[in-house]
Length: 376
Image (cartoon, rainbow, N blue to C red):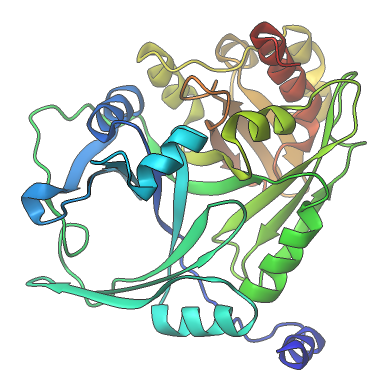
């Protein structure tokens, strides 16, 4: 296995042994899937898509599938207290369990990743109904998070076998959310490089950006982060770990309340962040508050932008620029009572980076929330 990996490194990974076509879906384990689905529909503009549960022959859990453009979420709840999903929710609260990835061949994806040291979560499995076949397989990653490889090229149904169309009279208008831009994981002390190596060797990802505690720090706390990307750049996974600071960092707070490593936030793309955030705020979505002094000097740093600065300031949207353009981003408050999972809304106008210039303002905003909770 090691010789195989080294040979590929020598050849600059010319052959992508794990071609990925993006995120197929994100599955959340939650305490009440029916209510969670209604929340995401109401607050974020998702539409009803599919359902699985006792009525479809699935006796131990229920799953509601919601979709908006190319963004698909599954909300899943156990029906019995002794179920693994119930244990997961009890330990972690509502959170991301599965980041499912689109592949051409789920069997090959499994064989390639397992041969390189991946830990099996799901052996290749084919499910079928009158609309065709889907092949799934999966591997473990940090904490209890898993990646499932989905090959749906022979399937024409509403979602996948075992699900039926979920029709509802209530389907709010879209808020303009498009697809998963990236998913960020929080790992424990001195664990970042271990998982960077895992993604490099097991999945063929590359470390495209690195940030240390000089880049991501405030007066009180710090963290380190490395951004992992697959070959075509369709799938990106930044990985954070805590760094020493005077007080508890946001990553430490997450690890404490999540009781382990897991997905910190899902970044979702939009083509018009002003319209999207205006809509989300009108639906009750809460975002971090950015101090006014951030906007006093931001245009000196990022240069000319198309949007009106006053509108961005009113909404609390951050701005950053790299060599290829600029981006606009904003971060929600936690989506549940535990201060764990949150969303980022991002609009890229050429930029391929992750908002390094905004780190200080962002983390100071996070610290104000931590202090209010008594966790700083």
